[in-house]
Length: 294
Image (cartoon, rainbow, N blue to C red; front, side):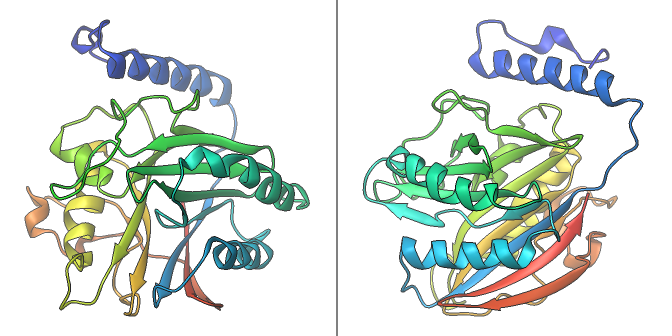
């Protein structure tokens, strides 16, 4: 932090104000933790195979099974964008999530965290939230839409959402929640890293190769690898694969570690990050779970 180019920050710019606050908080946390031994964090990325017929009730049942299966095995469960859907504003689901999911997590002996996506008003609102046994603790709104969609987006990549920051901390590491195409936005907009250690990219969906929205390879190359290259940290992602299997080689954890100049030339073989193990959970939708440590 002390080596940061403070002159590049604009005191009239909301994003730069939030960036400054993030840098100060990061520096305080480093001062408090500098004598502590680094404590690894386990992340479980969850990709779904779906036929498109699901409800919030089905998804909650699946999530409860994941919690029971993964309790004590991971610190964080990462789920796709739009995991829950509502025709209303996303915040109409917040109280129920706090009551139902917060209580479920509160019954555990571990400190398990859940990161999942909520889409509201037919996709006009696209959110990522973090839930712990205390309830919702972090919220991020999509800030970088695709060229073909219309959203009610965040004012900046660091905007508060209903008073919540989109950056949260587990143990000694800071996590940034990106909603789907936000991963591309980090690189395309040349955004400054607000001193985060990990990017979590909640992706919506991929369809079969013959259909639109089938670019899982491009997303890994230019979204995951691009964001990792620009911010110098690992990216973890989760998505729903409709009417197709989750590709065996599609990486849900990516770290840029190559001398190649552009993501255009990046290949899966350039990715040093490998998952530790994989599990399958079959319900109304199939969940493919991969474990990583950071």
